[in-house]
Structure formats: structure tokens, C-alpha cells
Image (cartoon, rainbow over all chains, first blue to last red):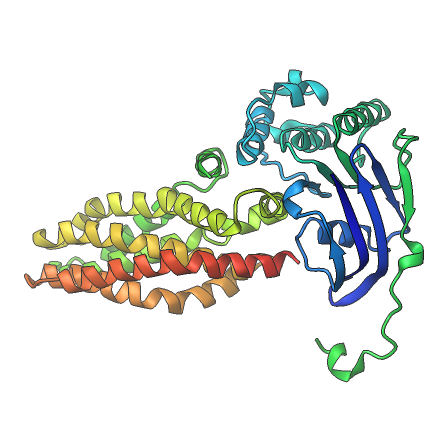
Length: 205
Length: 218
């Protein structure tokens, strides 16, 4: 299985950010997206995940094969760690959260409410959600924000196991994940040229 | 989908979930109206059906702006949109959870509060029945309004303005069913129309709401 993206263009807030982007990710591969702030990493990942339509171009992989993880973890603060994770497992039709809890080192926190977790622990719980989706391609937006060095290494191990099991990952990140085998794609050359004149009407929209 | 329903019910019952907010508002309104209007039993019996229905409607509206806003803030809505459940199903289930935590308790509490307003005896059964049939429409229409305004800061005001006109038919027929019964007349036509509005909005509005959500998530 693989994902092929051909001549993709996507926009944020009506302004084109990326154009002419083509790449492919195959099973067992990780692709790291790089680029300065505002270069369209999040927009690209949201487009791939099916949350917004592409301006043009083709994506061969359906959004149903992707597990998307955004800046926000989607946690409910009054539910416990186990309840949060069980909910996402049930939504994706998977049973058993034990492996995900162990993998992200959350077993000791399982009974604690999410509002009492630290930022890094919340992030680990958000990433543990990926393991209960059962999906092939992980689409991750800054997955390591607020993780300490040990947790980053833990997460890199989880990604590596996912790749070894035939999965794939697409990561937008600024830091070094400790995944030397991952390919790097710099988005800077694909930056869309701004339209020269937005016109009077556009300025007021 | 059942997991989503269970989660929403659990969230509503836990601290800060807002369960009981609508019920408390309904109670306060119906306790205060006799104090404001005066103790004349004839007047109270005349206005009781309308007051009970308006109170139930406003109580429903009170908790609606949180329906999608909370899920949008913590990112769950994005994740639900990329999950195997269709967004139409998400809307329908969230509206159902809202009704179970708001509309159903209101309908069950209404007879007790009807006593406070000197509601005539024959009107009690139609009151509960009309609220049971009508409040699901309030939740579904409200879910549509909440979906339209989900990305907006302080969208609650705009949502109320959008939703209130859509509530008018339900209110008119629901209150009519009760007041006709209070006057000893047959209110079944109004009851059937209330049920019809509920059936129609439950069938159509989840699709409209899901469409609005998709646009707002872009």
C-alpha cells in the first residue's frame, strides 16, 4: 500500500499556500515535512486528512486510511485517561487499550482525569490515540510538542514499530525525532506565489 | 456511535457538564412567574401552557451553544470528522444526548411545575406528551444552529438569533395542544403537528448540520 500525491495545491483562508507538490509514501516509510512557520505544513496535513478540499491535484489514499493528530489532542478533561482512550478505540471499532497505554507509558495514569495531567502527559495520551485507530498512515502535526527527551525517544520507538508493522507516517516537525531512516521533504520550494492583486472586493471579504 | 452517546452523557453528568442547568432555569422561571403575575388562579391557569412551553424552550436553548463548541475547542471535532463515523451520525447522536440530558428531564419535571401555575387537571397528560414529542425538535434544530456557529467566538448570541425563529412552529403547536386541553377541547391535531415537526427536523437537519460543520472545519 502507498500514498501518492500529485501536483497538489492547497489554501488556507482563501490564500493559496502550497502548489505543485508531489510526493509518495509507501508502507514502512516515514516522511518528515519541514518548512518555516506559515509554510503550510498544517494546511497540507488537514488537506490530506480530508478536513479541507484541495485546490487541485490528486491524493491516491482515502482519508479513511489515515489517523490524523493535530495540535489539540481531543481530550475531555473530566474523563479519565482510560475513558478517553476507550472512547477513541470504540469509535474506530478497536478493542483493548492496554497495549496503547503500555506503549506510551500511561498505565500508571489510567485512572486519572485528563484535567490533572501535565502538558506532556496529555500529549502522550493524544499520541496513544493513534495506536487505537488501527489505521495505516499516521498524519502527525507537531507530535512532540511539550514532550521531554525520554518521551520523544519513546514515541520514536512507537513510530518505528508502526513502520515495521507495515504502517507509514507523515510528520510535520521542527525537532529531530531520532528517526534517521525518515526521509525529509522541505516545503519551502513549493510555496505558492501570492496573487499579485487581490482587488477591491477581496480586501473586504 | 453508542460510544459517542455514552461519552456525551458521561460528560454532561460529570462536574461542569451542565446537566441540570436547563432544569434549574425551568424551575426558577415557573416559580417566579406566579410571584410576578400575582396569585389570581384564573390568570395563572390561562397563561400556564404558554409559560411552561416558553420556559422549556429557553431552558433547551441555554445549553445548546456548548454542543459543538467544546468539541471544537479541544480538537475532538476534527478527530471525529476524520473518524469512521459519518458527521451526520455525530450530529444526530449529539442532538440525542442533548435531548436526553435536557428535553427529557424538562418533560418529566413539567407536571410538578404545572401545579405551581395552577394548570387545569385535563392538561397535565397533554403537557407531558407535547413536551416529549416537541423537545426533540428543539434539540435537533438547536444542533443545526450550533453547527452553523461552531467556529465563532461567543457564537451563542448569533446561534440564539438563528434558532429562535425556527423554534416558533414547535412552540405554537406544542403550547396550543396544552391550552386546548386546558379549555376542555381536543388538542390532538396540534400534538400531531408537533410530532410531525420533530420527525421532519430529525430526518433532515442532521444532514444540513453536518454540511455546515464541514464548511466550518475548513
